[in-house]
Length: 566
Image (cartoon, rainbow, N blue to C red; front, side, top):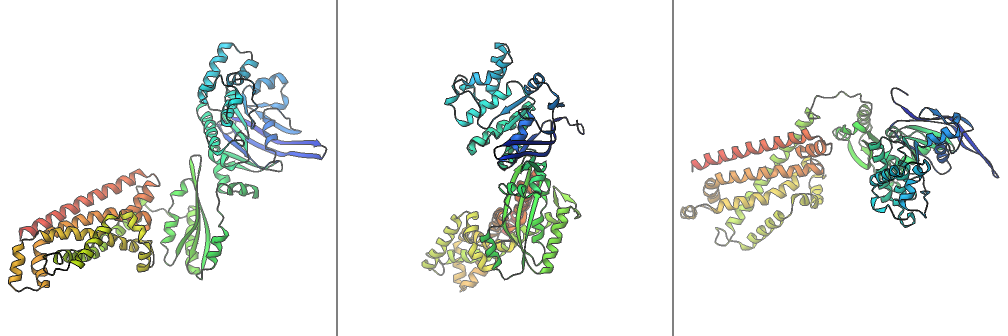
């Protein structure tokens, strides 16, 4: 018992050697591990590391030359054969090569441990059916083992190990002979056994993916020694031994490919490459976002990985910081503060700082306001062309009318999110970048101007033809007709069109935020949806709904007053 947690397996300073024609092999050298109740403890190492020897010590198939092996409080070295056999009934074993009787049925193989115990037939039948149901092989009860697939054979092996209701399950490379899909199903079964039956599991493997998927603790072995041990989160997050780092890199690759490095080195700007690792709750820290807000720093993400470790997440980002040495040092200082938790936390609302909320709101207002202003100007011009140049218009020009009409129809037929991506080269040519609120203005303007043009065209076409006749009779020029007759008479309808357009822009700006435009859309997606921050999601939705209601009410009121004064 350690700190109130029951100790299931303790190996203390175990040494084991084997002698052969090629000399003495030191299979284990001063090996110590501690497995607590409820653990899924992984032992990983390359071939010849001593993994199999270690697990054979735990069930007494091998005895250490020196050291102790204690299972459920019993020192195996002090037990008689009868006592050891009794203890083994509480230790299930799953083998790499299944070790099943090919000439017997699934039922008989599973029943073997109970047959050896001379259990009553009724008890055997009940238990076998129970474990068959648990491993989902009820329909294979009377099938011969030789007719099964590799995954099914392993399930039979697991079922056989469960018949004695063990407290401990030992897995000797239980998935190495299986394909990836079958491996995943077997690991899910082992996790189910651990969770639902409370069985402590000790498994050996040479696959770090296995450790990643189900283990909470891990020991790394090399040349008969445990070179590193601890929680999976700690070992994955801060591997110390070279062999551990090699294993971790098979799952979490934080190395920069040479092809990328060569391209980066060709840049003339001053830069530095940084690795950022986020583990567990630290993934919530907006470190990269904060670095991007350092004036004079450009952040380029060279690579990134995200891995699930039990109930936690580990993210690794490889960043290129471009800027002066002074600015890079400032950014690195901020990174180190975040890593150490030394930065002062701002007051948060819905898990986000007030500054972030205000910044996001300001970015949305910036995008909507400027795109609406520019889009309105372009939209009015396009609408006037459609109205004045159509057949029978004041300045009939069917070629210009058709060009504008076709352009509007094409742009309006493209979903905004596709338009956003499709015109990225144009956006970069105009503003020099495709990221940020200013860059988002280009697609927003291109999106909203044809939309507004159609709405305002309909408004202009509703004007009483008699008014235009009166203007013509008065000798008004085209510009005077527009200024003194068309626009004043349709201003109320145009206000409603702009209101509708503004509401549409709100939705479009949210999509722009999804690809780096910032604003409320980015806030809801990055800090709400991706972080599973439901209160923030609800808050942003409520804010947008309230804003739309206010906007629509204001638009209706202004339009009504303008119509009253016509």
